[in-house]
Image (cartoon, rainbow, N blue to C red; front, side, top):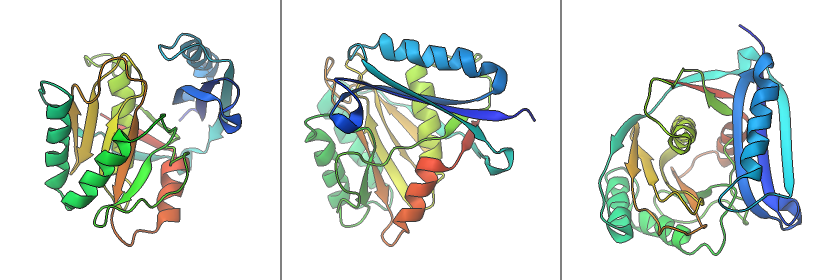
Length: 243
């Protein structure tokens, strides 16, 4: 097997994220050595031509990924849903999450936290699946990283938004202690969101109003889960998703 490299891009406007810069874009791939240059350039181009604005800070990180450290997982099943508006979409999202072991109070809290964001978070909020208590702290959240697909997706009718979301959701659902996920994008031109639970990626249109640049995600976590271990897997463990 050829050596693989993790390429990660994050971009902001107004300086680095750490200095208060406004998040514009983030993306990543796991590719072979001969693809590094081309893919890195495509990620830079993405940061410079984004609907949220033109980035003035772009950070690209490239690391060799030890082959024996890579975990291969199966992609989630996909279910497409029809919704009429934001209220309808979020009501359906709540119903889907409540079919799991997540309590109604926890679901309500997760939705409330996302709806209450004044600006997008780079990472996800962690919510106790029973009490609804937020487990992580601050505005950074948990940033899921080091993931890609090893399958040729050219045969699938799938846009880049969905490909990236499905890869991320599949990694998240493979993590011990995660019960479900709720997400909608911070891209002002993309209003589709999703719920992931019980091995299924539920794709939901109209999860936010067109033009809104505020989005985020919440992960519902089993009570008693080792949070440091959970975060280490989500942020650092290399994963390839197979279709």
